[in-house]
Length: 191
Length: 191
Image (tube, rainbow over all chains, first blue to last red):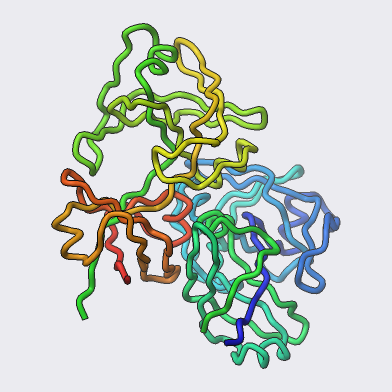
């Protein structure tokens, strides 16, 4: 049997930001400063962080991921949603219609975001060549298995294929901690 | 096909405490005060809470579960272990040899616990009659499946059978949040 393995990338809470919102939080003409490159080509973690504030809770030092996007999108975990006291839906990145908003506080200003808070669906980034190797296509749903004392099978993992994508399974800290796995671990794609 | 369903009980971080340690933290002659009954017969959450302190972090309002036990045992999540900066093994309750210690701080004193910090293995409590219905015996390992957008299969779930046990799958907040499930949800035992 041919085991198809995929590396894991664990995401902590973060946000993608529109240029207009970046300037409201960090001042006119603000730009993002690269802290480190991420697995996907051209994506990077930034030095810039902000606070998320709801009527019930606050999360500080939430990192912005660059480059700037068309719309601001905040990605939190289920654990975070309890701290913030807001109901957050599980969504694919970019699909932010009818999602809750939140207050963002930066060093130079704040924004009452009207929508854009999501819990990201787990997904695998891959190139067309990877997709061929795995026998899958863009939009397919697969399962992924972790080994060890907390072995789990994650169902409903979405395949996302693009020419510039680098093979990586994106899960959040709740999912990683439940399975006792970390960034760089190799998991088996089982269907 | 006969679906065997089991209710979920989600555990947050907590501790079980020995009488001697209870008195060091809450004063001579201290006893536990019931806050609410838990699913297992005779077990209860207490009004009493303490703080867990490591060299790297602190967790406050950690609830004691009663009644008192022979040995003090602290159960945290993987998420907690990162906050505390300590490597905590996954163990069955009661198996605390060669586990890390931690400082406990109560209203009347503190203890440098030498061992007893664990991440609890997920497990299902059941009566002998339940075990017969499920076709399993004490110590068996099964898998449990959750449905929904974050459907997961938890492998390595230990069956614990005792006359006074009440059917309940015990998982922690990391596991519940990864699967987007909560106390009282019904999950399928799949083998």
